[in-house]
Length: 121
Image (cartoon, rainbow, N blue to C red; front, side):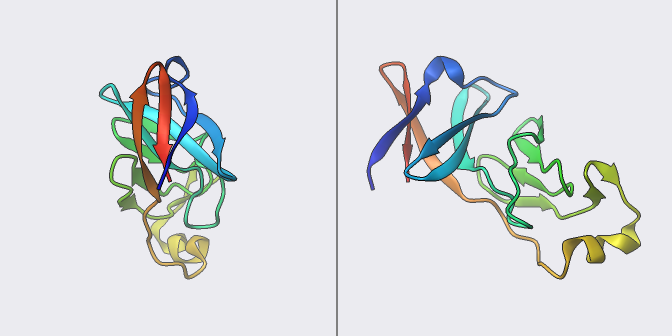
């Protein structure tokens, strides 16, 4: 695996997502407690972009169907529970998930060197 520059360090800030294209993949970059985190900019539910999701601490919530993920570990914290940000009753969650089982997001090792964010795919 090789480290590839994905962004300048100043572009990656706490509480926001910076999207970069690395080796043909859409990679989301953010900081959690000052440390750069990198993950695939794709929700495992339907493959929609996570970059517009709400960040709370180390978690990001998919803006489309409400799935929540830990941006450091990739772990799924909550599975589909809303539709375009509108919370839905529990009985609809199975329909919204369309039979897909909870899954985590793909994370990548990220580091910084000489003012650049490097991602190891």
